[in-house]
Amino acid sequence: MFDDNKFLKGTSGQVFLNNALLLEINKINIKMTGQFEDFSPVGDYCSHHIYVGYDGEGTLEGARVNTGIDAELIEHYQNGTTPDLKIYSNLEDPNTGKSEKYMVTGVQFTEITPADWEAKKLVTRSMPFTFTAIKVLSTID
Image 1 (cartoon, rainbow, N blue to C red):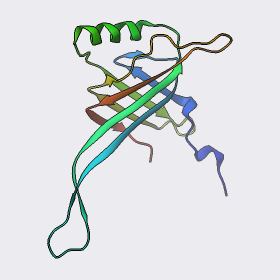
Image 2 (cartoon, helix red, strand yellow; image 1 turned 120 degrees about the vertical axis):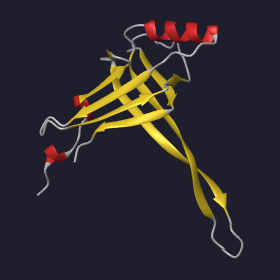
Image 3 (tube, rainbow, N blue to C red; image 1 turned 180 degrees about the vertical axis):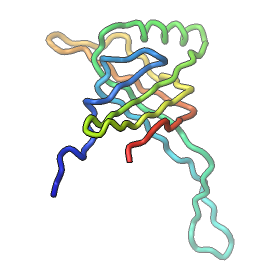
């Protein structure tokens, strides 16, 4: 039998930047992309793909409720400094109380868009970022 309650829903998620809950975020994407180098040994007609590392990147999206993050990032960019940022993602299954939690560190926002709005529209933002490490804090089994 098909059980609708088995599906995870983003509505029960939370996103923190450092230790601040970002209530305005309605979408988070965190992904790791493997880096591979092709290797073709003599006598083997198949190309082999050797894992050599990964890239970490993602995006936060949501409504714009303040400009404090933008101002802080602009100051860092212009001064040539790097803020120490981490993102914490928590998605809970309200049916079971279990949650999946991830923390990414070494976060660098790669774009800043201080002004992007239109009359009669909700002002939103998209904040792409890179990261250097990810830690799995809990999973839903």
